[in-house]
Image (cartoon, rainbow, N blue to C red):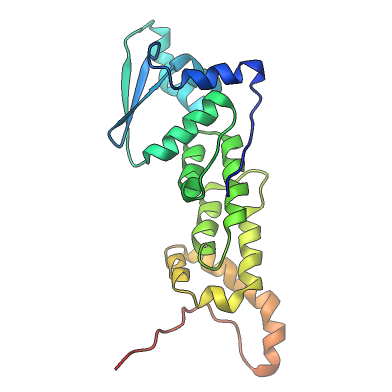
Length: 211
């Protein structure tokens, strides 16, 4: 599934979007995974606070030289999606890029794009994905999207399936999240299990050994 979101861009949005594929007037080139992405400092600084801080000094000095900027630890697909959002005010986000793009939007202070990623990730929550998504929501704090709470509710509603699934072990790197889940589980599940003398456990199920 893919989602759209728009930022206020007026009648010039299609023109800005076309500029992204036009390298003739670009004055900055991002190098991402060996790919070259041509862009324009005037658009980047007008639409993105993080780029404004990055490029304003060179613009004040009147430099017209085309600047190459290497981008590390980001996929080409995610960075291009972010530029499409900045230029055109709307973007399609493939599910497989949603978590990475959420982190990228946080890094470049694009709250509208973070909100889009939050909506997309919410639609992706499942037993197999909830551990990774709740970690992303906790780390990057999606604005106006109750993504983390949605993940928590899903975990509690599907408790046995989630905590016994192998991917739940990914949360071992986030002990504070495990503690939040444990407290929520005790509040909701303990009354139902007290009669049986058991309490909810967050320990991953042991895998059977084959002799």
